[in-house]
Length: 188
Image 1 (cartoon, rainbow, N blue to C red):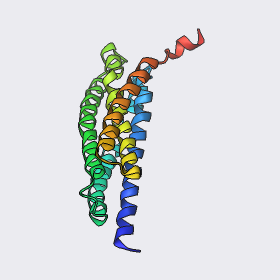
Image 2 (cartoon, one colour):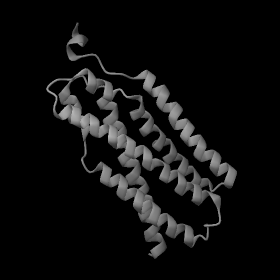
Image 3 (cartoon, helix red, strand yellow):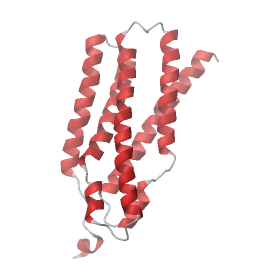
Image 4 (spheres, helix red, strand yellow):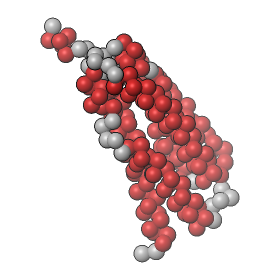
């Protein structure tokens, strides 16, 4: 086993960690947007408390190992590694904005005794879906960059296309979902 193979393993493992953290965030948001009472909100607010640390750690390992792997491949002169880093950095502002909105939801739910309209409105905020959909699409765009290793304009098209696709898919999904009917309404 060589240092290169260990670093490559760490890179792939960190990518899988990032994918897992995004998956748990999607699951959490899915259930939060459908919450019919406060206990549902509190249950899905932090399904796994360590998810943000997993995401941050994974991004740092991906960046550090990616720099090493790029140097070993002598690929710093190519476009795709640079755009992969730019795309990875694009994910950070979305994560920060999502975190800010989720902290507001957490504060609203912590002091509440029932599901209030303010809390329900915060959970239905379309930006929550966009702020999660764009990073997921960009994540897959980065995987495409790493596997296809395209030239400059193709790399730019992949990153821009990922952002646009993430926004469009989030908007389509936002229109299709909403809260589930209250438990009593289902039997009626």
